[in-house]
Length: 381
Ligand SMILES: Cc1ncc(COP(=O)(O)O)c(C=O)c1O
View 1 (tube, rainbow, N blue to C red):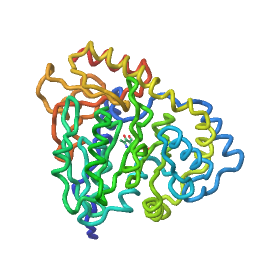
View 2 (view 1 turned 30 degrees about the vertical axis):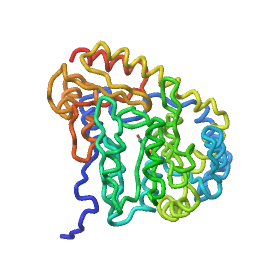
View 3 (view 1 turned 180 degrees about the vertical axis):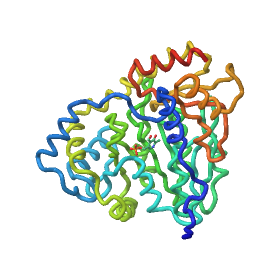
View 4 (view 1 turned 120 degrees about the vertical axis):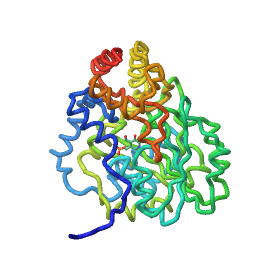
């Protein structure tokens, strides 16, 4: 019998896979995982086909197609007034997750501490641990998931290597405000602390709010990896494409890992995305598109016994359920699938200690009829 110790002994199958499998078994409407149930703009299919027919089928350059890197640099400059050099400070990745993995792999070593705001997207903690790092969680709680930066400061030590932020935030839909950014500037100035800013929902932000990209702030961008996802931007999560921007000294290390991890990202998608995004209305209209969905979903949910938490960005709506009972969020999520054929994610899964604040997360990046069918069933609860 061969024995090999696990690199992630405490890690099992993710809650997303568990809930999706259960949802499939019970033919439930899947509002658990964060992906659309509708197609992207057909123009994108044509552009991918065209790219393939035009012979863009071999390895792309390691850092990404120059035309796409230039487009990314221009977009960031136009939107946030930040200058990133396409040759040395922009890398196209196989989605946001790979960018996060690579940023952590290239900087985190044994004993390094990383401050993570929980509930947190599920890939941060295992990746940190994989490289010997220690997760220092800051626990955010409903209804507003606000951050008390004096408490964050208490998590700092001589071993603090990085802070991970995510705005708009998955799973809570909260967004960082100017006062949060100023606190972050104050906390990190005159230190070597790095920032990993997960901005995959940058174009999904509501009620006229502006996305406060870390790239807007010179004191922060000089120490930051910023991660974006074309999957979220184009309704094509299965294409697994995204990018990372960072100052040259960080990007140099990032690419050392990237070149042996994925080497390069698939070529025809890059060609198509570069052509598609020339028209900025393709992404500037995204917030309005999702705000209409958010408003419709929230209005429908008001007929249920759930209490709605605020949703200022991302395509997730969280709810609490004290009028329904005191069961655990996992128990309720399981009951919803089995008895009401609707799948949601229990938010305790996003805390390293499975903190249960009795909150469920629904994804509303779905067709109107999907949302209507789901809510019709949920009103019976
Ligand atoms: C907060 C957050 N970061 C990163 C990702 C991963 O993005 P991608 O699908 O491009 O890997 C997701 C996907 O759901 C996410 O919600």
